[in-house]
Length: 123
Image 1 (cartoon, helix red, strand yellow):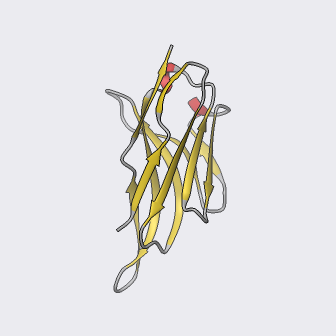
Image 2: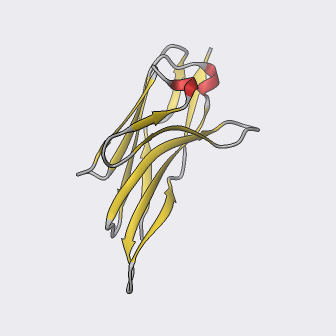
């Protein structure tokens, strides 16, 4: 089975930094897009940053210039460096990956999620 395990959340003051990590494990054929989403209380889950296997990235407008997404294909990992954090960045952050696995008959791609990690930014 495929799992995504996150780490790195916590409490930080406004203006501070945090680094989130997420590693995939299991019987994996390939990992395509990886990224980070977040969900604040009472709000819908939103894309924060994404990165495809070739390295191209995309960001939500609200985090451009402050957050950086990166990945290590050898480690099957994706990272989110968050700088200049603001109280409005407070949310549960989820790792997401489009992962292909080999079944008995074919290669099948699915959408996988981490368990979520809390990021709290105090003012």
